[in-house]
Image: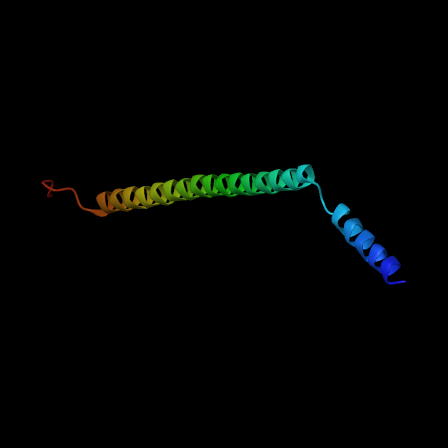
Amino acid sequence: MKKVLSLVAVAGMFTFTACGPSAAEKEAAAAAAAQIVTDSLAAVEAAAAAQAAADSTAAAAVAAEATRVADSTAAAAAAAAPAKGKKK
């Protein structure tokens, strides 16, 4: 009976060993994981580039608004100032 149980135990160990992933399956899983990392890094870089473009556009809009305000303030000041040299 001990021999039969030993034989069954050895067969069970071989069964568990045989059910594991093969070297090719492990390599494919590693390649898939590497591809996922590469894709996620590319997505992060694309998002950063889009954010940088949006930030530069916003900065240009703020600068244009500041210029417009300064120009209109200068024009209003020039229109409100009395003309020099013409006294009646």
